[in-house]
Image 1 (tube, one colour):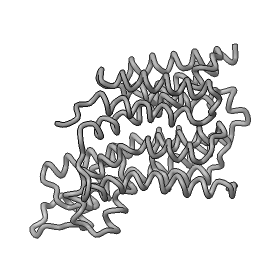
Image 2 (tube, helix red, strand yellow):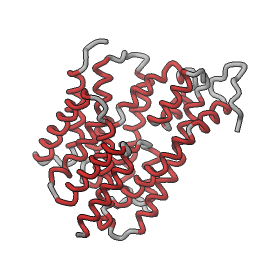
Image 3 (cartoon, rainbow over the protein chains, first blue to last red):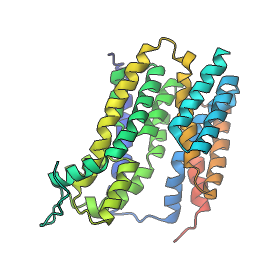
Image 4 (spheres, helix red, strand yellow):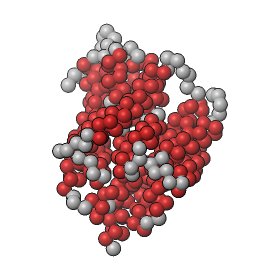
Length: 99
Length: 238
């Protein structure tokens, strides 16, 4: 097993960021009141960040990835299982690349 | 395994409460294994060693944040962009933590923040339900969280070890697993029509930032645009 030293700063920063979110709500509730707008913005965040991670790949317009994304969306809508959808998308990409 | 005996004197953070949470979370923990293996696989496909992947699982302990971080590292995004992405992805945890304040606030500082580190969406929901049904011991949250933490670590290790076997992960499409997971999670997160406006704003912002050449910042732009849209779409007061 190897470990890249340059990753240490990364992991430390990410650990802090992740833990800050977990601790902040618990800690801040001593001072801040939750509003419907704040709650709506926080609810929207995960979906929008996930979409932002997909968009660059979608914009590349390569055949295998485009077919893969279509399969992922279709299976996720049909089954409601994100794990099955992701694996089906991977299988689709592998298939198109092999053809 | 202590039986689910309702305590006579009210326990705040006891071993029995811990085990009640740990056992109650076993179905959730079992369901997590496949996800952890998938993360190990995609980290391996992105060139991470098993040690690196496991270390990230133990410290960040958030599936979506870990997937986004590995993606950011792979796309050459700077640490700033990835940290902001993680902050936005995990900002929902502030809501979960805030709801825990009246209950978890009775435990000691170390107990409370250790419980928050191993908290996830599923064991939080489980614990809140148990609390509403009369569970008063705050160690229930720590027990249920640790029950999900352990399979998360083990699954990551297994996935990374399997991934290391493949010399050409792209032939199996494994390099696509990361984006595939993001897309699948996004589909599952669209629950009501009120999600559509932020979604549209996110797509436009991400596309604009990507086409402008700011590699690695599309997730940040999408998150900020979507959060702002949701903020202004919501009623100002309840």
